Amino acid sequence: MTDTLSIALCQIAPQVGDIDGNIARILKARAEAAANGADLAVFCELVVSGYPPEDLVQKPSYQRHCMEAVEQLAAATGDGGPAMIVGSPWKEGDALYNSVFLLADGEIAARRDKVRLPNYGVFDEPRRFTPGAGYPDPTEFKGVKLGLMICEDMWLLGAAEHLAGKGAALFIVPHGSPFRKTALEERTMAARARVASTDRPLIFLNQLAGQDEVLFEGASFVMDSAGVVQYRAPQFEESVAITRWKKDVAGWACVEGPEAKWVGAEEMIYRAVTMAVHDYVTKNRFKGVVIGLSGGIDSALTAAIAVDALGADAVHCVMMPSRYTSTESLEDAQACAKALGVTYRSIGIEPGVEAFDKMLAPAFDNLAKDVTEENIQSRLRGVLLMALSNKFGDMVLTTGNKSEMSVGYATLYGDMNGGFNPLKDLYKLEVFALSRWRNAHHTPELKGPEGEVIPERIITKPPSAELREDQKDEDSLPPYDVLDPILEMLVEKEMAVKDIVAAGYEEKTVRRIEHLLYVAEYKRRQAPPGPKVASVNFGRDRRYPITNGWRDR
Image (cartoon, rainbow, N blue to C red):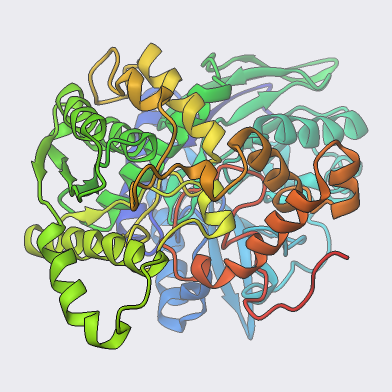
């Protein structure tokens, strides 16, 4: 038995469906690990297929391709280089497993199947996979008993304790753990619980990728047997990091590893959303993006995120003024575009508004103007953006925030048009905070310019849709410092109305917001995807019925 091991944490970015590309990514990382003297290269959960593969994994041809890929990767280890731990779907009889493999000496040396299949939030693995038959035994490598667990098996009592009882010296846990604001703390707490009950060190190896609404930020780590995070791989970056392990009388310990600094608060959220935009746009093969730049804070922050994700050359902004657009909005939109260095054009919608007024006059028969005419303006803007998208091949980014999407303060087929919404899981108060953060900070990963990229007046002026004279958001909604906390209690915390009222909010306001939240469900079902940031997002996490007669009375 060896008393030293070099284990490479291969935090790479697989792509769902791109099995051949994932093979190439795995082998490239393995080569880097080999050059740095690794004995073993560890990869994330379902790295071969990409995660989450959703119902794609139910196609027999896809299953076969994944299994062939594992065999191909196993054969590659016959060169005398590092062994590998990789994750892949595996079909056996009628059962499909979420499995992890030890590949060594040209062969599949061991397979372990995931036992606990999560069925909450963004996860619905029981729909697709069969649970493993009982907790796995340790997997031997170079005479060392490794405790292999897959993601959820670490989070719950059972698998780690079984492995330790069978002599596992250390745990290796491939993960597909999605980003959320609270993820770092939750992961370390779960790992610490397993370490505390077993007195074994642990490797947490996470995926890195934006996959539709779900984002994986990496942040892999090594935790010692006392529950202390010793070494950290970076967030939002690919990394092949070597960890050096030694055995002494007290057991195995990691004595060398990556020392990346993790960030939190606004910087963490901003980088997460930026990565999500980059991956969604580029993986779906769009040349760039087009954004309706209104002079308001939502579109300005969206443009800044897009530039930081894709570069200014790939971002095209359009001001679409109407008779209600203020001079300040015209000036602010142009100033924002100039600060970001993006292409900018102005296309007025008044000719279209007049045409629709004329077309609809017989049907409306001199009825008073109302929200109908406001929505026509928004829908004209949506038509213009989609026309530019079709003509030039750029994806439309929508700009609605979570506050607006919660209460339906958005227009179907208008400002909700688009392929992706970077702000979908960010409340309005968070939009303000991120805008201020971006003006004051810059990091090397961001492709946009340093300094103030969102003019101060955009941040400080009262938000307005500018669809009628002197319109302000607060004409239709409570102030955001009231609205957002109530929404968070209703959406993320699922609190009862009486408990929210007990927290100090007016009952009439709470009941009105609850009602708006429910009746806007049909709009949200038709909204574009956006990156998950909070513990509960619309779509993947919160799945309420559209037809819903229930209210909390």
